[in-house]
Image 1: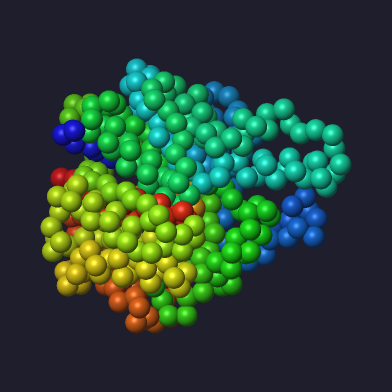
Image 2: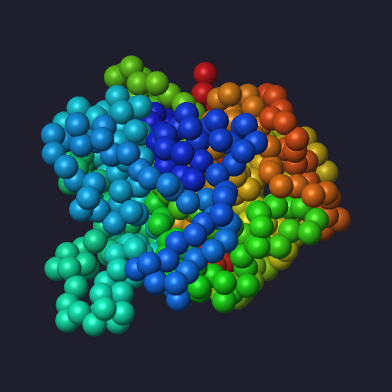
Length: 410
């Protein structure tokens, strides 16, 4: 497994906006994408969602539909709509949109936490609130966990290996890691990887509130007085490609994926123990062959919850030791919210953007240092960086951990 893995395409949709340009602008201008959400299931005031969230106001699929020559967006659950629009951007960026033969041999590995929540909830509303006898005949194929994979395959003519990966909030990071392994092993020259999530529904919102994990105001990673996470929604897609193949066809290369690590805590369903996170980071560093003292940009999982941020800070300290101060830590959930199954992918994409621009997007909403989270944080206005390496952490319920490593190319 010696093949080198290039990133040749990037695309995303989030509460920051649609597309890479809007996302990067939102990360660096300090505004973020979190604002007050006010939604109701079926316009019924009994089923109201009120609070901060990084929601997608609307998604524009006109460019995709123009390419296909037909309308498709109205048939899709939002999770699929976000996925295909992000993938359309990534394939366009990679110069592959019209490459039928190349896409015919490409693979898809795409992550998600829960599938089509909007479709599920609309179906329940028809049955239990309106008393209707049935639901839409395409309900199951619209909400199944692999729906986004199926839509990407059909809409873009991708005929290679294709499947969904579900590991809660590490899903899309695991998808990118496995895509890297697939290209390294020579089993596929091109892999479409990433993840999507659209969980801002009344049922999901109520369930997260029951966990007492949601902040009442803002996501404040590693900050004193942090009170929890803020939900987001959207998708991020990357095109991973064999480096020699990408060079031969003259593709633009954004970065090189050079390592990954994964582990399971085997400890608790919701509470992390830190041992698994430390193991995954150490594995990823070893796989990538980076020294502990080589300055890295670290895209932290950084949920803003008291326990998870403390655990991650301690794990980073254990892995990097006294060399930690050489690194720079960003935590972009403060800007785009927690995209759950798509979180790892959009945070990896944000980190790649930071490497390419030489600019670290600041952690928003910071109120001051926490003695349990002593880290070299990117605070204040965007700061210039010269880091060549990105380490991106994703830690999920069930103790499932995934860490990605990339290097600036060129």
